[in-house]
Image (cartoon, rainbow, N blue to C red; front, side, top):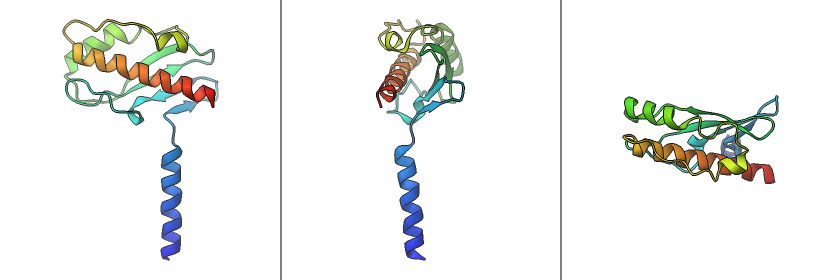
Length: 128
C-alpha cells in the first residue's frame, strides 16, 4: 500500500513538473497561460493572461484571466493594451515598447510584463 501511494505521488509530481504553460492546439495555434509563470502583479495581486499565437507565429489575441484588480482600471488597461501586440510575429511582439494606460499604470505594467513573459516562454518552447 505504501509503495503504491509513493508511486502515485511520484507520478503526480512528475506530471506537475513537466506541465508547460504553452499548449499546442490541433490547428497549429498555441496558447500561453501566464498564471503558471512567475507571478506578475498589478495593484491588487496576480494578473494572469492567456496569449494566443496563431499557426504562423503571430500574436492573435490577449485574454484576461480572473484577477483581483479594480474592474474599472483593469478594463481601461485591457482596452488600451490588449490589441497592441495583435498581428505581430512573436519575436517582434516580445520586444515591443508599449506605454502604460494613464490612470491604470499598475494594471498596465502587469499586462505588459505578463505578455512579455508569456511570449518569451512561447519562443523558448519553440527551441525545444
